[in-house]
Length: 289
Image 1 (cartoon, helix red, strand yellow):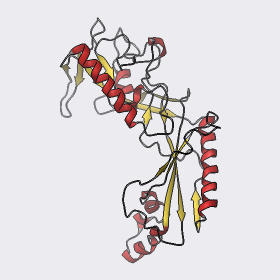
Image 2 (tube, rainbow, N blue to C red):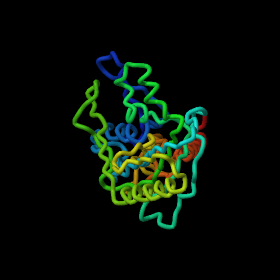
Image 3 (cartoon, rainbow, N blue to C red):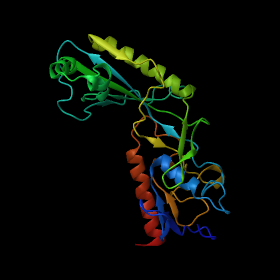
Image 4 (tube, rainbow, N blue to C red):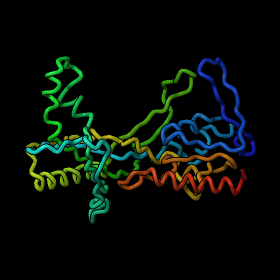
């Protein structure tokens, strides 16, 4: 960073090089995901920015939010030929905004026509099988299986954040340390998901149905959000409404990192794209082509 709040260059080090060099740029956009974008800002410390660039309010790395995705498996008497199509083929948005939302998160119900890899490496334990006939036998019920996932909304809390680790990468820079602890809202969302699962089982009447009972065993969907949150005032966040880091002229953050919390129970990608397009229009207006 220059003394006038102008982002001067990226510090780059090639894999085989002993020292880094500066790569100058008129505009710098950090779009490395919520975890690594926060890490880059925290690593960018000097006398003027002792806690990292954009961190005057202490918000860089704070407000981390994942989606909580819990899976279930059902086995039916008749074959469904799960996985024949390949991708996800159905979703239900009926439970995105229930009357009880606020006490827990909404749920995006995934009725996916695909074979869950965890069936193969979990219950069937195929990694340790060398007999092809035994592999076929263990996979024989897959055409009768159907997976349903519960894609749940989450909210930030003081126990969800990114900071710098004591461990360092091969260049000597601290790695990102992710601290993520579920809160009461998340546990209530899991209870709601279990309620929906029981309703589905009662309606579908499968031969066998299973959903885990541990709320901490969830998939984030790689939906990492909120570590460089948008705000009107510098003390309340990291970037302005265009993604520009407060207190700088030409440094921007893009992606889910600038979310204020999560994206409800829906996929965040389209919102990320919309914000990126808005930032692009602003860059064209301010800096030209």
